[in-house]
Each structure stands twice: as C-alpha cells, then as structure tokens.
Length: 302
Image (spheres, rainbow, N blue to C red):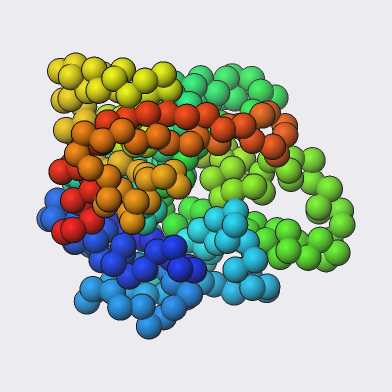
C-alpha cells in the first residue's frame, strides 16, 4: 500500500489539479492506494476516495507562511495524515505523472530515509553523506527539491514538531527573540525545501534522475532553444524521458493555464531566478525551449 499526499491552499490551484493527479496515479499504479489532500477548504470537490484533511494547528494562521510554502511541512505533523506507518509519496500539484509511482516508493527501504528530488547532481549528496560518516564535523547541507518526497510519516513527526515550534516565531518574532537569532535562519526559513534540507540533512536521499525530473532542467537550454531540441534527438535522452515517472513544472512560466496555450513547436522563454549565495536578492536568467504540446499541454485535458 502507498499513501499519496498533496497540499492545497489559496487560489492558484483548485480541485481539478488534485483530481488530475489522482487519476494519473491510478492509471499507472495497480496496487492499493490511500489518497490524502490537506486543504484549507474541507468542502473541496475532489474525486470519491480522496481523504480531505485540514492543515494542522500550529498556534497561528498558517496562511502567513504560504509565501515560503512552509505549510507544506504540515505533512510531517503527527495526526495530519491517516496512516503513519505506510510508505508515503508527496507530490506537488504542478507535477505531472507519467508512470508507476510504485517505482519511486520501492526505493524506500530504511524508515529513517527521506527521498527528495535533486537540485545538484545526486552524486553530490552521496559524497556529502559519505564525508559526514567518516568525518562528523563535515556537516554541510545538500539543498534538495521537495516537489516529490518519499518517506514514512512516523519517522519524521519530529520535523513536524519543529515546524510547529518555529513557524509561529517566523510570524511573531517577539515570541522568542533568541530563536530568531538562529544562525542559519536567513537561509533555512526561505522555503519548505530548505527547511527540510537543513534539519533532515542526515536522512536525505535523492530520487534518481531516471525517475524524476524538473522540466526546466531537462527540456530547456540557456543559450538557444535549438540546443534543447537537438538534445531531445539523442536516443539515450529520448529513452530516459520515456521512463520518467514524474516531471515537475516548478516555474511560474510553466503553470497549467499558460502551458495549455503554448503551441506545438513554439518558442518558450523561461525566467529562472538565481540567488546569490548569502544574499536574498535574485538575478534572472533565461532558458529556452521548443514546446511539445501533445506531451505536456494535453496532460491537463485528461
């Protein structure tokens, strides 16, 4: 059995995103499933069989943290999910499913592991983990992507407790001035995936890039769209793309209402924020691609 979880708040996403995800998972996976949607709207019109749960109480209005996507950390809070000892796959609603999620869930053998998607190549994470084992003072963080996560909820209830403790302080610093002075607070609390990457750094493993990809990294190029198109003609690249289980569209220019309007063979320019290390200011880079409508735009019509 696999427990599949998503979160939804605000107006950017609606029930159709949840239902599309549920139907895609069922299309490719034939085993027993539990679907859970953590939503601020308990009357959300989702498909039958989807369990709707509220965001857990953290002592303050969680909506004050949505700009950082920190409410996604609710999935780790004890009692937020109906099952705590079942393999759980979290999937962002802007992620497309093209294969059997059982292939991703099957990687989780150790209940103390937490699988996320890569940002830097996965071998960097493995090197960091090895270095930490042989030389414990080497305790740097591998920043991973939280669009897809695989874990056993009970093993990470402590992470949910940490969110409940620190979340309110981000909204009301006067609650605990000493905690606000936490030395890495500027980096750790800017997003849910940084929070997870730091506090769960000793548990993180990476979903192999043969199973999960970020669209903007796999299908686009910084220099010219023709490089991206030529890369797609390489047999090994085409074979890898056919085997992806999930592809996440974590970029403002790749949201559903935009990509449904992109035309086959059309030029798409993506603005990629680039943060200088230790600085909250961002530069903007541009990546290019030639759109393939049938593969991606039509996904939302199913």
